[in-house]
Length: 119
Image 1 (tube, rainbow, N blue to C red):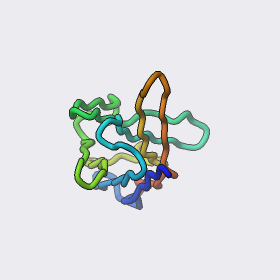
Image 2 (image 1 turned 30 degrees about the vertical axis):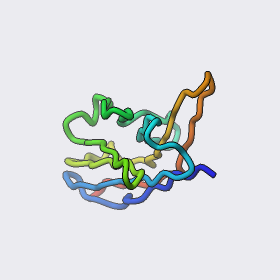
Image 3 (image 1 turned 135 degrees about the horizontal axis):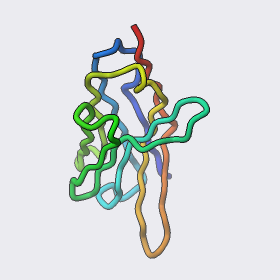
Image 4 (image 1 turned 60 degrees about the vertical axis):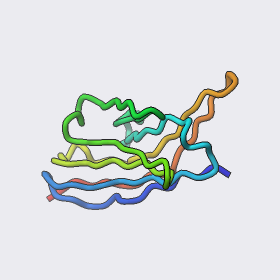
């Protein structure tokens, strides 16, 4: 059974930092592209950052230079270090694991963790 379990969300003041973590189980973690998405009410879920199995990263323009995605192949976790947080970063953040295997898309999501940025 595939599980992606996020943790680390919470309330932080503008300018503050948070670190999100996602623990993956039930998948061959090393071959999956791992990513963080976020969503606010009434808006589409958007990609925040992704990291491939060989460590290539991609960031949304709005978070570049402030957020850092990383992965741990021993613990099967992916993390998102968020610095200099802004009120517009507030959202539910979702962990995603994606892999194409034999022509089949394997696409898994966590349940999300709330990030609130407010003074």
